[in-house]
Image (tube, rainbow, N blue to C red; front, side, top):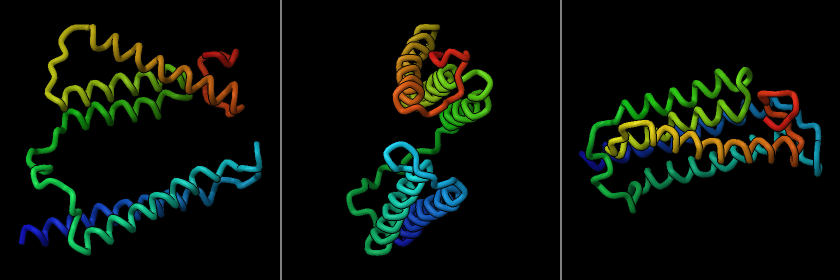
Length: 169
């Protein structure tokens, strides 16, 4: 009974990945395909990701239906979900989506990193008192977001929302 229930859950995971791929493909249809730099249009990457997800999802469903995920440990699902970490991660992503056009790419992505790191650190059970972890996460977030912003805006000529009109922040 436990094996059949495990296979059913694994099949649902694979089906979820397939549905995610189909949703991404449906969104990619609305993106114009006008060729840009090097003959690649803006819809290329969404189609590439949707195709890869579709292949992975189909493989997951196949694996689940032919005996289950064979290399997975049984203890993987031992504990209850860690909802506090989920809330921190979700808050980071939602804040990024809400603030990216008003604050700009670098500050909003840095905030997303800080909140996500807090959620992951708490999920590991690591106590993080004081301001030091917050400041460390802020610095790391800036060190990741700023080069990404500059790479996209200066080298790839892709416009991302900035804090100033200069294009450097």
